[in-house]
Each structure stands twice: as structure tokens, then as C-alpha cells.
Length: 114
Image: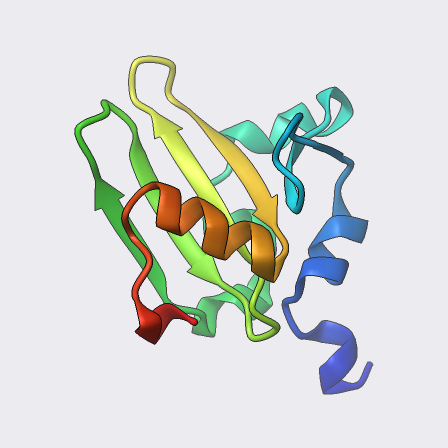
């Protein structure tokens, strides 16, 4: 496999699991019921070995969930919400545009993140 075949990107992760688009959120996807097993996996485990070199940011807002943000080299990314009361993650896969829009909505976006 070439480096481009293994690089973490929106298309490679989209193909790895089944996702469904979040209603009224273009460019944002949540795991489909058939891929529900990944809710027990930490964000970097979802992405696989190639994710070890990617930076992971953890954010705690006024909500009870911790938010893990991993930006891909192609500009897309994975936002994962850890539900401590349920002991599971809700993973969302985002296109570059979907990621920027969500980070802005959460007030986590800076021009450095572009």
C-alpha cells in the first residue's frame, strides 16, 4: 500500500464503517446502527494505527460530555463525544466544511484550525 492509501482522510474512514448523514447537518455523519460496535472504541482506535501520529484535542464545555477532536490531513475530522454516564462514545465523521461549521457552532474554531 502506498502512503496515500493508508493516510487518514474522510474517504478512508467513510469506507471503513457504515455512516448516515446527520439530518440538517450537511457534511456530518454518525455511525449507522450496523457499526454501533465502535461506540466502545476510543477515537484513535476507530481510526486505526495510522491515527497514532494525529493530534487529539479534548474539550470539556458546559455539557457533561467530553469532546475529542481529531483533524485529518485532508481537513475533515472525527468529533467524538464521550458519554460518561453510559460509558460509550458517539463518533461523528465530518467533511472539512462540516467540521469547521460544527467547531464554529461549539465556539471551538479559530483561524489556526482552518
